[in-house]
Length: 437
Image (cartoon, rainbow, N blue to C red):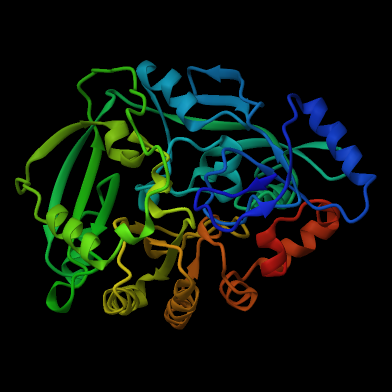
């Protein structure tokens, strides 16, 4: 069958298997070990953007979606890896619990969040998703099921967290939830008129738990990098509602010509000038703050049948302002603007071998796929590399092996561990082959 991830590029010929139980996964791996030149990868909800969950054989974990145990006193939840973040929030948010870290969509699996070591709007305070994982159960290529944590099989734990599924199949995880006292977020919005001002406002508000900026990536001159910065804190009004479901759907792929510098420029200008009251605190439901695009089902179809690519980079603090300004100038000059241009502040890196965040700033932009975009991305890669940055593996569909290996200093250790545990005998993705892992 033909398969793609959320960006709809690239498309791969794949055999899809969807085992129902841990025992089924063990049997599938045994069958794969008996095959010649086998290549397989685990896949959750398919929300990575590129080719990290594409392989000749894909093992879907979505049927492993059970809650196993919850400790009300500690907030520790044990669950199967195919369970989605949405399912967790639907059950626990009305009871006063929230995930410690959430990405931009709740429709990802726990296993996928571990494999990508996803980050959120609070990385500068709380780090990544995996920093709140206390234990995981991993099915190795040999068929052995092992427990991993920071104290047990620690090397395997730090390779599996952010490991893009290349050490084995995560079947279970134990994670720590956060106690909350409302289903709402108190949001404060700051309008900035330049990239310099945007950075200043981030630095002035490092004590805020959540922060994220939407950037007008087509603004030029003194207005380059103008933004709306959204600051958030959990409310404490003891009011809880059951989270809502998606209400809008994109029924078919839109004609890609509708996305051009003029339509995007009009949208960006209207969005930037939307009415806000300086300093006013607005109470909004948590899902609206954290997952605004989840209200639009199949929003990836807006980019047309050929799909889209997201470019997400991180640049260390010392070079972030200069590097981001160069990238935004390149985007505006090329007229390849994005509706979704998001800037966030990162705290320190963690110990996971392939984790993306480092102390600095991350910029994410979506671009419809066209032939010229690949060469354009290569140009942006050079800027990121010159400023000591790197790209996010969960969003990558075309990075070169040379850039990856120069920007992820622990990649060789990852390859050694794959060999040590025979993971390289089975677990491969199109991405891992491309990057030399």
